[in-house]
Length: 394
Image (cartoon, rainbow, N blue to C red; front, side):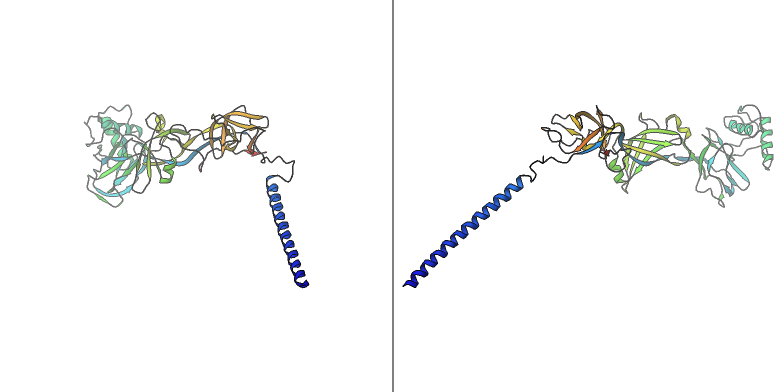
C-alpha cells in the first residue's frame, strides 16, 4: 500500500516538472522572437542616420547630339548624245573624263573627237557650209592654233585652210573636209563620257550604233540604307554632305523601298532646289560619285553638361539639380547617352548630386524627363552618338 502511495506521488511530481519545463520553453521562444523583431527594425548603431550614400559629379562644358555617318551617292544619268557614223574596225577607245578636242574612240585611223556644242552634228562640214554647227569646229581650230579670229559659222577659205593644216599636223589626208561622224557634240565639257555597248576594240562598225553617252546635266542625290538604318532616320532629318572644301545641307524629299528591303532616300536642298546649289560645278562629272555625309538625328547642343541622373523634376514639371549650396533651377536643352545639357545658374566645375537624398524634408528626386524632340527629329541616345561629353565623379 505504501509503495502505491509513493508511486502515485512520484508520478504527480514528474507531471508538475514536465508542465513547468514546457512553460519555460514557451516563454523562451517568445522572448527570442521579440528580440529578433526588435533587432531588424532598429539599427545596431543608434547614432546612424540611415541615409543613402551620396554621389557627386562635376558639371562641365560640352555638347550632346546624335548623328549617323553614312555615304550619299550622286547619280548623274548619261544618255546617248551621238550615233556612230564611221565604218570600219574599232582600233582604240578612250572613255572617261574628256575635254574639248579629246579623242573618245578610233575607227581604223579615223579619230572621233568630242567638242562642246548644243546642237548635234548632222552633215559633212566643208567649204561653203554655214550654220551653228560650223562654229564649234572653228573654236576647235582656233584652240589648236590653226585659225585666228572669232567663230562666225561661215566655212570659208580661211576655215578650209585651217582644216587642212590640222589634218597635216595629225598625219591624215589633207581633204579640207570634216566628214559627219568625226565630231561628237557634248553640251558641257569637261565631262565623263561612256561609250555605247557596240563601241569596243575589235568590233566592226557599220554606222548607226550608239556611240557616246554623256551626262544630261541632271543630278540626283540619294541615300541608300538598310532597314535597320532607315528606322533610325527621322523623316525630316538633316543630311550634311561634304566634298573637298564644300558642305551642303540636304533634307529627305522622297523615299522608296526596293525588293531587297533597302530604302532609298532622295535628297534635296532645304528650299527644294538642287543640293549643291551654286557649287555644282565643283563636283566630278562621273556617272556616280560617292560623297561623305552625316545624318543628323538629334541636333548637337552645346552648353553646361551634367549626368542625366543629376536632373530631377517636381510635380509641376520644373527641373532642378542639387549642388553643395542647395537646389538650382535648370532648363534641359538636350540630352543623350546619359548626359544632359542644362541652362541655369550653374557653371562648369560645380559639383552636383547624382544619387542619394538631399537635406532634411526634401522630396525624393524623380528621374529627369527627356526633352520633347524637335519636329522632324529622332530620339536620342544609342549608338552613333556624336559629341556626347561624360562627367567626372567627385
